[in-house]
Length: 383
Image 1 (spheres, rainbow, N blue to C red):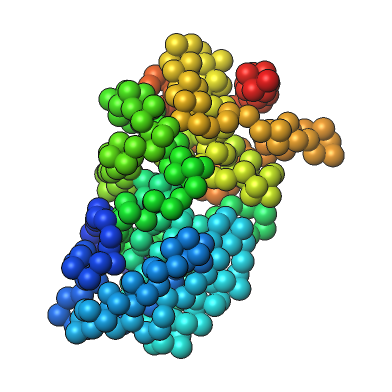
Image 2 (cartoon, rainbow, N blue to C red):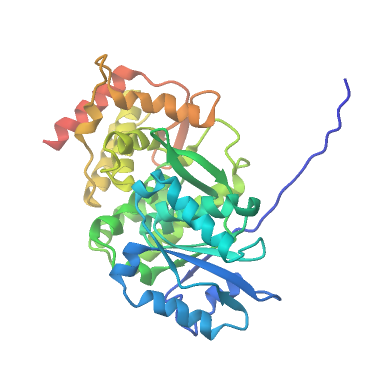
């Protein structure tokens, strides 16, 4: 046997901009993110609910590109696309975006700019990643969840076969632009949703950040703008630090530490037919794993109580009836989330639990009896 072997290294720069009123003609953030020596063609995809909440935004976008027409060419008016988690179950939506990429000759030197929540960004990012084996993609997240977490990452996916994110790619965006002014029209539940990802990353990585969230919980509960901005920026920074510094940005191993609380959250979304939003599902998933960590002798009761109390102060419910759904054999359906979580990466099951606030620990087996006991504890506290 003979073999030729080379080490291939791929590097990229992931930039996350923070601004307000990104489509004001005198705001050069988007132009700087897109334009260089060559004029660039741009296809804009926008979540339809944003257009409904802000009827002026599509004209603002068109006016922005007119003002910078020497560098940027908007190939058609912004394309409205349905958002929300259910949209990720739709292959036809991916095909629609691909058809416009083809029709308007968006190539590898052009851009697909996606404006919307995490589901829309996932959908559009997947289309961008597979067109021409990858066209340049820019994300403009419009929810706290996407600005703080999902919009900052390198993953794009849609759901299939009843499983979340079954079809997807790792394709870093060319840039992410967090425009805080786009959060203004969100309903309270959507404004709150991103807080849970901040609690998550603080629990496993940054005790000081957790204490800041505790201190600011009252202001966050009434959506104080400056406090929200700080939380989003720090949360995004911690996620970006992990992607850049973990040594495994494309998840080739069997661990996903930033998915603390997510093994049950993803399954809970499926069991509710995505009626339970992602942020709420993650809050329940964190609560479940925090109690499990305590029952397993890893986490002190006082720390467990602080985390649960913080989630409640931020406005999250910590129990859903779907946690006790059973299959035809009488087994809790939520437990299937463990195997689906393992299968998503392959290899050995690896779950992140808590040793203390700010310190996650990886384990490779969970006791179903302790999981069920933790669920019943959450149920009791919800009454």
